[in-house]
Length: 493
Image (tube, rainbow, N blue to C red; front, side, top):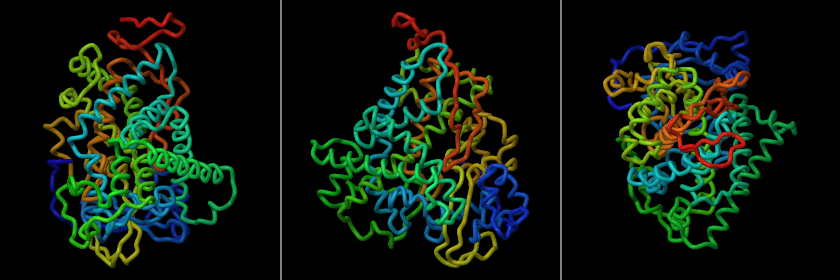
């Protein structure tokens, strides 16, 4: 976060992860109780060695070391078991590509995520959020996780390919992403390919989901080639394919102020975008754009429901800023300060991207400890965000932490919902706007209450969040959008 406190360099400690059979594997503990396992590691040191199957790996528990690692993406490149598995799904897109390819790919995609595009995106986000609110009824039990997945699927599809996902295709995307997300986590922490070649029902579901998802993207691309050009991200990619080059050069992806070395691929000049790259970029942005923001929104409503003071503060703000429940635009977003705090605190308590891997490209040193070339490094935003040295009472949901007068006290590297350095998430502004629009629009019309027997606790997979959050819809008094079940269809105003 901007304004973070810089701490003096100190000598780092090194340890080994606890476990009965630490030299066999810690993968079982990481798979069965991942959050508890992560929370046990800081007591062992700033840099903790563990085993994932036969492979040695190191978890970074200190925010300063994580920051140093992320600011040197040439030494600590994308790689490790996580990106090996993601590569099978996303191909060589912007999330999984090596550092040597990153700048060219980011330059290609950057125009679609330029800050000047956010106001238009905010308008379509508000349209979809309003449409979602109109679907609910007073007293209805809603699967909030599923509803947020539907919302982010519609928003993402409109940005990527102008709404080429009809209701049937959107349902396919949600179903396939659910199967993929479950399967990817297991494949990350158990790096033994033979296990996943066994034709178990779970493995068959995962492979079939991959096949259907890739086939759908290919179909959309083929349809668009036969249609008139459109001003969306797929249109930008198709234009780069047909005309050569890597976009219009608006922005170089270096929005964090981190320089990119001259040897990166973009310095070689523009080149034609291949069919495979178009496919890989779309599948990458679809997966990351849908799942992560949906998990953030579901987590926000789960946390607000059990923190009534924060919920009341949110309602006071949206009632004051969004008169008569109007949809938020860019101007309103700038005034929704507490809403921003709610989203930021949700990202702290329950970051959708909760565990990542990197790989060393050369022998190097981190925190005074020598690491060999090819070493797998892990870091966890969840672990960093729950460090009491950085965030007092880390388990409490306190949006006030992020009020302007307080957030400057955050330790450098302690808050990393979108990573840092020149591999920082290209869609961070987009994701924050989408989450704020979703939270504010729903809060303006509905109060969501927990339902007995349904657990809103976050469940780790490749992303973190509540997987089947069912809540009860209670209309806000001024809402224009609710109808009682079985009524005559006339809005209660």
